[in-house]
Image (cartoon, rainbow, N blue to C red):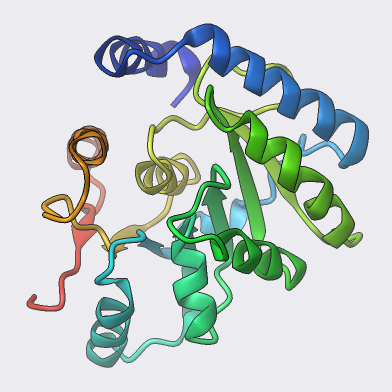
Amino acid sequence: MNFKDWAPYYDKILAVFGFSKENDEKSAACLSDYVRQHFPPATDVPLFEIRGREVIVCGNAPSLKEEWKAWSLREQKKPSDLVVIAADGAASVLMKLNICPNVIVTDLDGRHEDDVDFEIDAYSKGAIILIHAHGDNLDKLTRYLPILKQKSSKDSVLIPTCQCRPPNNIYNFGGFTDGDRCVFLAEAFKAETITLLGFDFEDPDVSAFKKKKLNCARHLIQVLNDKRIRDGKNEIRYFRKSN
């Protein structure tokens, strides 16, 4: 989704949540400057392996661990048969299951303090990491970007993203929360199938603000699913342990 198509959704998000476009742009500029100085340019985004593949997008709902086990038992597929994309703290759940995700989409603000440590560990083991800038994570960027630089090797891939109009060296694939941005990424790189694990839009234990974000994420995923159906592609599938 190019920014022209994304902009109406972004403007609505700003209005509904009261976020500051200026703060988003400031954070994106900070990420842009740091990446330009310390990381190789991601001009050819190395996500072509998604094209035509079965993609599993893992959200960070508390159900993820059991859903992964149930889905794996039912489907009898190995992680190596798939492209596994983890949303932020979902990477820590997968790493504890000895599964290194292929791709991590994160704003560096996991549910638990050690979530980012697992993301950095996965990155050091070869996971592609998409670092997202928005108006209230500038402190996280300042804290963790130097650590990611330290953990980089010649084969490491860090892709900077934002939700506002992107500077030249930053990408905006669309999406709002880490979870739905994973889905937008899979769609952008033409996944054959997209299955969601660890997505619970009805979680009763989240705050009112988080619930509002989950509703927005669900709506955006539905927008993508409707487009896939119109284009004759496979529907986005949700897996729950009870399925």
